[in-house]
Image 1 (tube, rainbow over the protein chains, first blue to last red):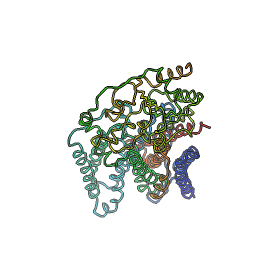
Image 2 (cartoon, helix red, strand yellow):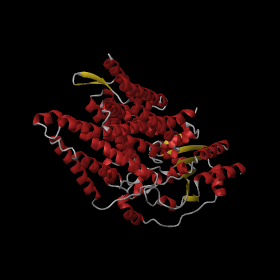
Image 3 (spheres, helix red, strand yellow):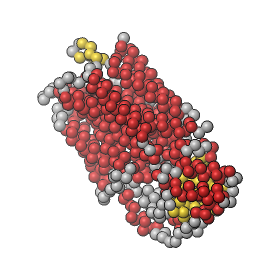
Image 4 (cartoon, one colour):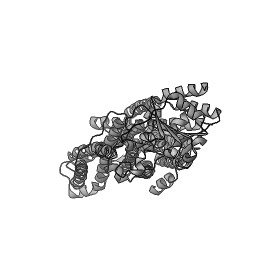
Length: 477
Length: 82
């Protein structure tokens, strides 16, 4: 009876995951979709705790250790909620990466415990028949371990990179080394499947996988991190699916495969937005060829500065102003002030719109989230293609802490690491005002020719401060 | 299931990529069910399994709860405008 109830719980869980993910892909229903999936998850979790039973030596057992389980659940829930509530909007991508790593670690730990369990049953000298019997299980366990560990280590590095704790690091032959590490982990895994009594090997595989995870993400530039996180996200999905096979658990299978497939596709979509192949992102890392590129473009020259009052003047007499927000805006927490400026300009009869590059900020959609937080209306947010049609008729483009997404090198300089990435064609507009804190190159570490072009004027300073001053200036004008 | 996953993602506006990634991130927290099973099956005196299982459930919960809450916070902001 309980078994049937549990099956129903899992069925509900699976359906809510599918529906939830489906609803998440539509702005109107996204929030409900998330809650639905969360509800389904709760049902599946509590169903497992109270209804799951297994047969051992002919008798049916229910799960024990309730105190431990609930202690872990409660601590995890409290810490998770607090962390998620307290995190700054700008730090969202790090947070997702961190939680993803937790999931990966969880999958890896399951594999370790299950394997220990298995090797105990097996004893020191198993018969060939016994080995054959457990081979599929070992395969799944080892697979779950490798994927989970890579995902965990990779996510931790991605997290550290996004909040600036870990620097880009690469050396020649790193790709070769990575391949060797991965190959030896897989080789050991295969060996292990045929010789499961060698249980210490499991830790060697774990070590190699962690090592691979670290060195796989290490050389990838911060600008590509969203793609990496999305990829690792789908890895964890696959690791969860391995758990599903292991326990023959429908809801884990559904959730895991769903995320694995959806995550992979999302990764590809993100790559497309940057017009790069996944292979290019993973192997042709930004960090590696940074220096060569700075020399290659060599577009040093004079940049022009513009004073606040001039900038205010130009903008208030414009017909159409396009704002290009970037990570600098997010860092300065200037989204509300930005909305303020937009309102003041609109009152003056200026048409104000936002041009949002698909990968502006640290994650696709990051800017939309931020601007939505500041109550910026959905209708004036334009995606790249739309915005590029509008630039020729635009008087002033105000770039707020964006850099790589407006770098003309992506179109003109084949040596540039971002060559081929579609950019916002801000040069089509009559005037370009760039607000940045300094002339330092952006996150991808590349010089930006745009700043030296005759149409461009620089407005240095913290985005929030500059925007506030602009507001005051325009009001008084 | 793979096709369902692909079908779902195919036509997503890039606006929603971040929340979607975050939502998917929470959903793969289902691994926690595996962790609960491990934990519940562990013998009382198998401290290694208990300790590892405990950590696994803890991390899994972080993934699930944190994931859903973060996603909700992101989406809350979309809802506000109107």
